[in-house]
Length: 365
Ligand SMILES: Nc1nc2c(ncn2[C@@H]2O[C@H](COP(=O)(O)OP(=O)(O)OP(=O)(O)O)[C@@H](O)[C@H]2O)c(=O)[nH]1
Image (cartoon, rainbow, N blue to C red; front, side, top):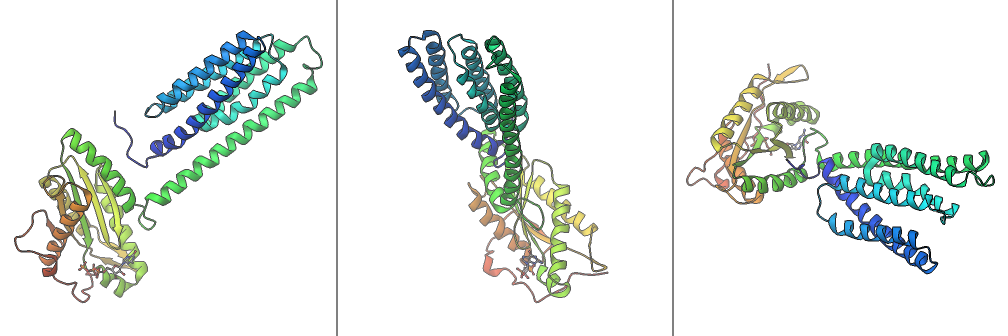
């Protein structure tokens, strides 16, 4: 099964929930141990044994969840087991009414551990069951089971449930917004360099493990400065968005494209040989040539120069690949632009690249 790429929602969510789960298990372990000792001391052996079981279970889970990928299943197991333990305690003749105050924690704990949907579903079932046990236990006691008492408890528990749910919904939304801000380029909506670096590291390990090629393409728009100079910065922004959309539409879902900065883009292409990637980039150039960018009632013909580097052949990490792809991209510029380079020309150095010539504006119609 494919694990999610870094900074994907599932991964970030798991990191957050693992911390919450660990804290919860620690609290359960300490609390259950303490109550177990107290109940043993008071001679209530049955309750003491249930609590001892809860403490041992929490400790075992604490060790188990450190590295598990299946955190959601373990969280549900924990919630079900602990709630099962609570139901046994609630039903025990020695348990006092004050024990039911723990029901207030159920919405909070479940929402924190398993999110808004499962949290809400589990809370409703648990509150319903706990309420049933309460009525069954104390039905002969009118001071504990009467409409006023029940309404008090129900409103209190429902308020905690509503707040827990609203909190979790807004937390998940804020987290998604922050994650988007942190990982995407604001102008084009493509991945930013930080996300690219994260995903590349993940993809690199996968490519090395599964022995398939991984290539990096650097793309730099040609004479972009002259677009800004001739048509204005806003027009330049539109061109960047136009190119970003075209590139993103043409690449596979497994490729990752990012805006590195300015008018430079990076593409990570897994599972393709250098020759295949070169073909793909030529295709992108062809599509771009066939799709001019409409700006201020003019069709601007945009071209780019590209350099390609392959993991292993040209370097063993992203920094080395960037350096090689960058050199080849400049070689494409020096060779006349609108080109793709995947092998070094002997004797070529960055200094020998043609410095950007003063402002040839792209062809308008
Ligand atoms: N509109 C716009 N322009 C940007 C942005 N970021 C960088 N630029 C401009 O991009 C231009 C890059 O110019 P150069 O590095 O000289 O490159 P070039 O004109 O494409 O020349 P060659 O790369 O040699 O073909 C500069 O004018 C920057 O101001 C941006 O976000 N929006």
